[in-house]
Length: 175
Image (cartoon, rainbow, N blue to C red):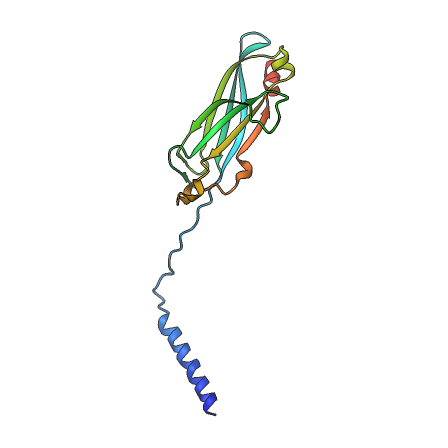
């Protein structure tokens, strides 16, 4: 009997303590949410300025998009690269670097572009038959995850680069 009364008393004290410590006016502690940072290599597009039916200036434009939360980082911690890779170059190599752009901030849904212009001859073997490939790459400093800045920690590396064939430039000359 003493044990039953003792247990009942403990339950009564625990319940009373629970209700006394719960103030309905207290707000839950604010928990810092980890931002969802995701910059994506969105597209590589081509335009031409024709000199003749086969020759002109081709402009290659790479676009990245922030598909996550606001991105903010330090100078030199991230760069957009645009590479031109000759057909037949091993895929383990990026090719020739033709343009770079550093940045420190990008709003959610914001975009950044990088462009490169070059002479193009759609009747030559080097461009017409064996057009180069273009690679857009978002690159981060190797130490970016240890800088205590959660607003620059990309959560999805699978969308940080894309490749397009320059054959699309030849199609523009045909149209």
